[in-house]
Length: 542
Image (cartoon, rainbow, N blue to C red):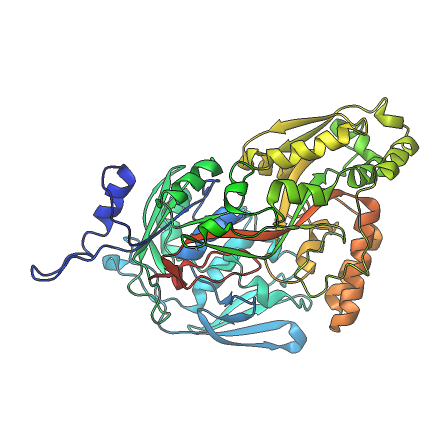
């Protein structure tokens, strides 16, 4: 982070211009170089509006720029943010938040004289109503759907007191408020910029917006008026959008990036041993962080077999779906392609790392090609004969995994065509029910198994229910779990729901993820967390 800035490229020139005023000193003082945290995101940001923070790339950027009522610490405990305190009243139906009085929106032309004003409770009323507005059409509307009361769910009692009223108690609700969807936005900014608010963010966060060259780079600068004392510790952030992870890795190794996240088959062996540890020769240059990540990787199956386009899909047979789950070696896949970063998904959809996870009580799929062949025969496709080719839609980031699995399926006689497309295109097809078989993942929005099992609740649309799975017994158990206050009893219900998913197999269970993050030795203050959020405001340089 203390690297000498080169101004030969447009991005470095841009940064130089942004921070020029910050580095001005008196003639007798040495000029200080701005400390800029640099990292790469392989998938480009699509919106800087919190209402559209639906994927990790957008979530990271939004987290730099905005705040909500509460936030998670590194252990996923809920702690104050803009709300300095709160109470849960009326048996869990009413949440009362008392706001700080020293939080201000970023300076912007949408405010009188361009000066950011103080955040008040009515700002949260406005922000939360945007999430459920049909006009906004936020992909995050599901977080409140069916949970808040129909009439006046969000109330500003006075400038510092904000209330949320639920229909029925919902135990994970406090964690929901920590999601990036629940960030506070200024009505003045939304009204001034309209649809262009996506590219003109006005938040309260540790960093303010400087410039965004879409698909290339996003530049943020330090918010000198930030309310959390001593933060942020760096002068700015530069996010590159190098779509090729290998290019990002090379830039990191050349010291042009301070941080990379994730693995790619082309460079994983350069960084990690087969046991999943950092190579000893890199120890003096690189820090490696590996930890459980509440992310479930899977192949989803569109379970709407009534539609004309899906009526002849061989995946309509439960035996075929089960055969696919038995028909590939998860352990070998993780060892070969991810150098043991991740764990086999052998205990249902709820990932390891949550307190309700129990591999002894939930027995999932293992590698069993003989059983897979028997199930194919039971479905009327012995050795795959007569079974139409299935098309698996994925982005380029997961081509290696899809290729590995499809080759093992081909050994069973199952023909698979891999259909590559842009991530954003695939997500849109999943949302519209146009993808019948697709690679997907579900990252925890809050640390409770309900967040994963809700992906299959029949009354949920897409997102989160991209498979359109509907099972009456599953839905009944889901509703029971929401009303259960005893953790042990609720966990038992979660286990039964996971066993239904294993039996019905609306997905191919791949692996429970782990974070693989690499930073330069110049960075301090880094902490892991199981939701894989990059909290830049805490970082500093040595």
